Amino acid sequence: MTIRVLLADDQALLRSAFRVLVDSEPDMEVVGEASDGAEAVRLTKVERADVVLMDIRMPGTDGLAATRMISADPSLTHVRVVILTTFEVDDYVVQSLRAGASGFLGKGSEPEELLSAIRVAAGGEALLSPTATKGLIARFLAQGDAGDDERDPARAQRLAALTVREREVLVQVAGGHSNDEIAERLEVSPLTVKTHVNRAMAKLGARDRAQLVVIAYESGLVRPRVD
Image (cartoon, rainbow, N blue to C red):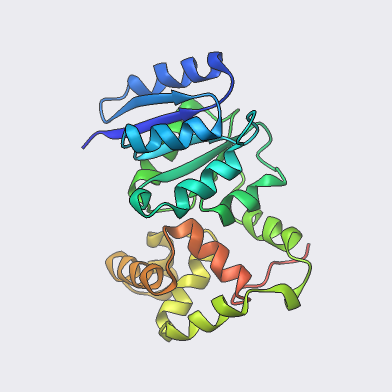
């Protein structure tokens, strides 16, 4: 199956470079280009995109607002948004994840990382951040929260629907671990881990693993480390 990719960036030269790269792969194609967030949302619907590579800073409707619109649209539940940012350590990253993005990638990443990110996002199998890795999301969520009193009580209540094993798996997912790594840590099969992850997503209303990470921290199930 061919992955349909939409490019959303206000820099035409950058879009052209991404198009050449993506179209060179046999399993993916660029189906449209947008120079602002409003156009990105419209083209996502019209072109039936699977993955949107979304720049945050664009004129008019920015990438963050566009991500919220895509995530809130019931007809676009299959769409995965990967945020592209000039600085991978960026104040907007946590807002992007909360808005519904599947992950983020630095614009300075290697071509292989970008292509891998598209495939991973399309499959919904892992949190995206090849260079920032395991503690970064936690740090951003910690910076984004004023304190424990502001943690989402509704999400904390929803955790009650999870089994003990599903909670254990959720903690591991929030740590940035892959299914294989979690399987080794919990001494179960990767297929069993995948089943627990899928059940947790269904119970918590999460679009993908990135959203599971957000819920795990915002509910207080996992607390950020203070270095």
